[in-house]
Image 1: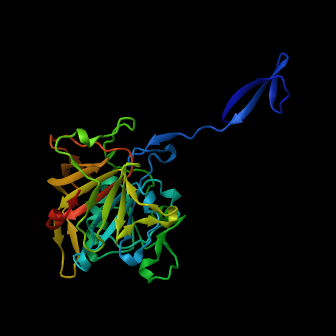
Image 2: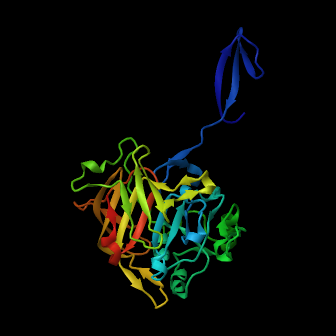
Image 3: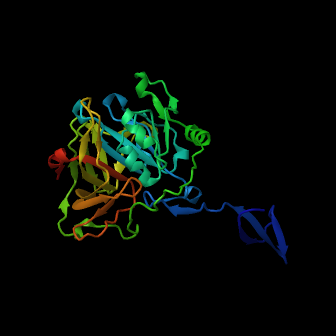
Length: 343
């Protein structure tokens, strides 16, 4: 018999057993505990069967008509950034998911921008999107950029076609098989991305010089006016936009929430008169914030190139350590940086 067994000494008869003297040594099967490891994206315990599996980076539309979003509350890392200089600087999410084999529905999926194709490689993630402007072609041609485009499920939801594409069960396995991409980390993988504190001794920014209270942060995106509020009972920041909590009907209407917030002051580069733009994602000594546990500290960030992870440093120049859990990253245009509200 396979697995782990427990031995029970009893004077009663048993169905499976070995007689030892006047007693029976009963041997009953017990399920083996699944092997676990700490995720390199969140430091949470997850199955070691996917330890070397690459994450995906899904582009999710953030127009109000695209709501409700599915699957974002279960994502490991969520980026939000300006997607266009038109339409009040409407934002788009890029959602990183390690355990993509368990996605039931994620989206809706929309087009990608150059900045996303400079961030996803630092996670060795495969970008999931539906097309994009011609500005993305030079990036898609790079060896270290892998992507799936327009190859997901269409789900009737009463909305225009561009808001009906979702990642559904089987989509990603089929795409990997058809593309020839490896599902495992490849030679461009740079190793673990964030530094995490032991879960037993979490980061307490109250002990860091220069910390300020942060029970709410309002981001300067005018289209959706997002803000995150701290819940001291859970230690999480709940995400809100369009005047209400961001809820996920694919996860019992759970609010999208995060243990860590990283806010980056980033140079925005207009590309044309139609509002297309990108960000200068490879940069150094740029300002930002790290927020966790109801406190915020000023940081600087740096990124050497497309495949190198973005690093964040405190006032002493030491790389910051994050708390175990999900992370939200806001890429904020420099000309809007002064409009961030922390309170």
